[in-house]
Length: 109
Image 1: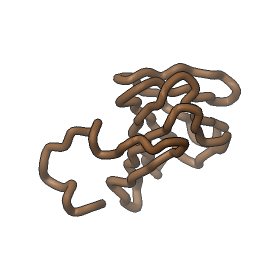
Image 2 (image 1 turned 180 degrees about the vertical axis):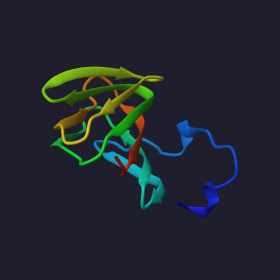
Image 3 (image 1 turned 60 degrees about the horizontal axis):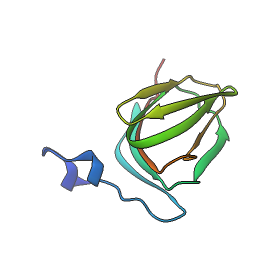
Image 4 (image 1 turned 90 degrees about the vertical axis):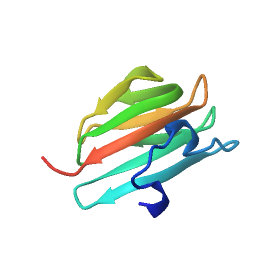
């Protein structure tokens, strides 16, 4: 984690900027037991289907995400969360708008 982020209040809207035709990420906490990563998806961008060995929580902080888990599409809006279960295929897409999210993964059962 960047030392300049520690022990002070931060506005999560401004920790990461959108970039045209890109997905931008910034890992803010990386520990053996888990990570917290901020993402900014420009409209039309996404992450293709994949799975992870641990549950992961997505918190959308701006815009609207289309998150598909095991073939079921969910619209997740700013202020909402969704838990992506371990070992289930999931994909993330910025179909209708750009969006920012926080991904929290705890690497423990």
